[in-house]
Image (cartoon, rainbow, N blue to C red):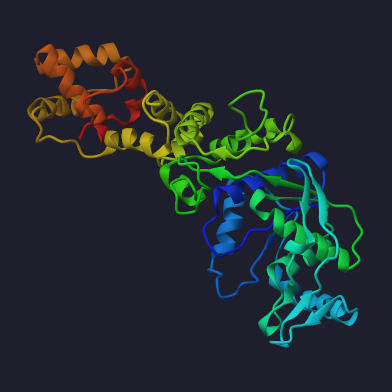
Length: 395
């Protein structure tokens, strides 16, 4: 069993999303359960609705889970296990605050093998007396996690490199509780920002919500996060395709840098691959031709937002007060009186003949009337895709 254990105390960080993706993929490869555990033990910091938001993000990325539970549901079990350790004299009551129960320090170093980083050694002297129950008999994060991994039978725990010390503490806790089942560990190297520092939630691209708000799509984000530090046979792929070659132990041991331009390149590639009708729904349509229209602009756009800035002007009120406004009004009147014309060449020649406009005035005015912009793909490519909407567009 593999588990993803997010905390509902903040927006989801992309490093957390990467953990979720890798846990899901390895569980899929091993044909074992993938479970979500909401670590809501810190009641003071929990944000209402964040647990639901986390599950919605997992759904957007097509990461189905076998089960989901809140860590607080296991409070009684955590407390029972802590009291048992106290009775077995493996733990003690804090002299200054009897409400706090601590574990005795380990006598030996904590050593474990990491699938990515190799052998990890945490010296015994670095392991202070470990709190397992705090004020109000609330279990510490490490103790609650160790208990739940033991209870649920986690066979592989994937975390970030920053959590190596936590892993050592939790291994020690499970040892004292007599847990002997084999469990593997893997810690993903850090994701850095452009300045070479650990990517924070308030950095651009640090938050999954920020990436969504910028117009990046789940398939592209997943592609990029799987690619980071991986020995991938190609740059552009879907998660199901990556399942055939992805190996957790092949992840680079070095920290990786988040490159927003690389993500833009990957996002553009996935937008190109997207089904035309599906793409059109991102702009409020259910028409493959609008999807094809959007793809005409992918030479100059890489995100949904950038594509939307190209598509929306087609259907927005036109600027008839501009320098080409008079000519646009002439063309508008003619278009409203014309029958549907199939080919662009016939449409163009008919408009030129009826309007009497000179070539330059005609071309500038027609482009502005149809697209709302002075530049863009050839009108001969655009026209077949917008014919059914001409009366709505040319107004």
